[in-house]
Picture 1 (cartoon, helix red, strand yellow):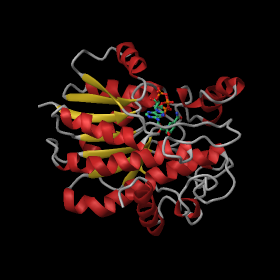
Picture 2: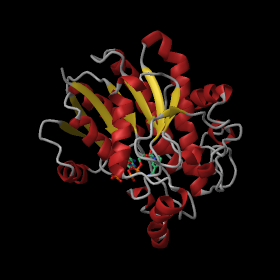
Picture 3: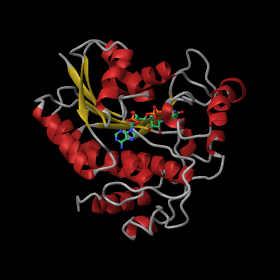
Picture 4: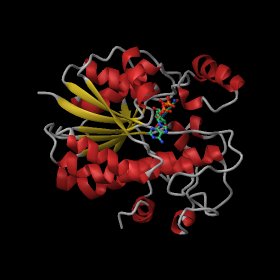
Length: 317
Ligand code: NDP
């Protein structure tokens, strides 16, 4: 029996390798949910996905309209949904001023959090009718969300405040979640805290009732991906080497994809509400363990409030 997974942002990096690794398991069909279709077709060929093992569908997370259209297009395929992987993200460390999504929201949080928030909410219905039992919703986390970890100590640290910016409507001039000054690296980290809070809130709301497994993982530092394409060239040269030889946190794109696919498909990861990690210093054969999330990402009251405000911003409430 073939199972179906949707992976957002499967046109490069971790998402592409996760698609490759899932298809290699033999019983998975992958929906590559991407904004650049020719690029995605080429990427699928680059990792030798066999024809018939994947479908490319358009999704631009920076447009709530596109998210709704994507859900429609997926339903028209007639496939059941067995896993949804929340992977796509942008990171724009050199921005001097915020950019905006089609809906007028700050672009990093709109893409990484709000677009995915709407997608996850709409696709819960599809996951409830999965052929896999139980279905899974897997969210990519990052060590940089967590100031308790070495990799999360580098400033600026994420800070959602009391979600004042979201409460004020999150349109200019309210362009940050805490309604303070815009800083693009912080916007990325804030959005990743939101991803984990959303995963934990979905677990609290829906796991017992539906059996769906909601979890998150930090695959390691995949320092070579296009995520860093907007960084200075010198950073792009030094960062992978720094992670390889100094911190020991470096993980290849292939291994990161294998890890995502394992959390999507393998029985030992069938636990809901948790955050998987292989630690910061990589050693071969290292086993995954459940890691504590940051204080903010573990704050239940914040998760509930974020849910309520995000639902309003994406038009669900
Ligand atoms: P990449 O930049 O290689 O991949 C990001 C993907 O997101 C691309 O496919 C990109 O599409 C897609 N994307 C960006 N914006 C949109 C949009 N508006 N709509 C649809 N898709 C979009 O980054 P990585 O593979 O490194 O990152 C993937 C995930 O892994 C992220 O969630 C990141 O936070 C997480 N992660 C990465 C780590 C790392 O060290 N690299 C470490 C820990 C977590 P396009 O090809 O069109 O640009």
